[in-house]
Length: 301
Image (cartoon, rainbow, N blue to C red; front, side, top):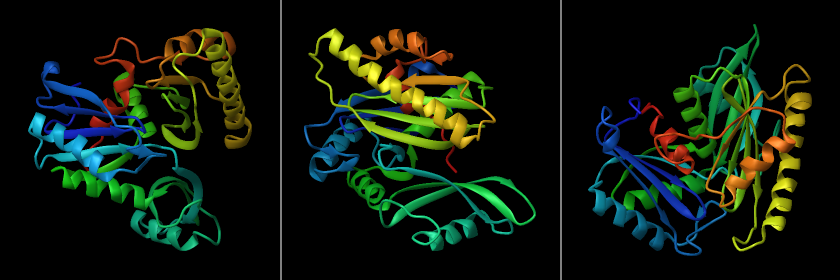
């Protein structure tokens, strides 16, 4: 993983665990420190910190154990409340000006399901008058709470990322991906996140909660998985007929996550979806760490 940023802590947050990586030397694979810590019940709920003291204590223990005091931190937040929209802005605007313009349009030309958003934009194609942009909006309060908690634990938060973007970054950088229409299925213990990428840009995201007992019998688990695969097929159709207006279709699936029945998903998917699936097998770390490995590839600026 020679492209990793060494000397930087990378942390991915889910509702249940904290995954981390710290690359001491970008020329030696063995210097990659990684692991995960399970949060005490109720620490994180719906992607937000519910018990700040407990969260800080968990992170603080890692900081002391690995000597991370005052290290730079990049972190990825749960994608449960992210909004991705394609909008238009006047072509003459710089990226900073475009972000300001978009903020003035919230509540009039388009709406968000939360107030006080943190936003980021990416430029797309432009004509003589207008430029298409991608808007990423996330509740600012959630991000600020994480930044403050990480700071209390002794780290220096530098940037936040979305988990889906981190996973796709790993796929794109390490696999030299050439597919232009990709659907990421990030299947975790309590959620399924579907994110569509068009020409390597995230253009759509759907987050679904999952409630499943690890002791359920195989037949009921298989039935549940089939229900979610029906939704995956709906998103594949939605991408083709609504997002690309029939001009393109998904041509690659990615499967990642820490879902306890991920092996069963791998067995069932080919039976119902006739698309190539990349499973992140034979990687440096197991598939559940792809998110934090992708975060480690994010550039400092």
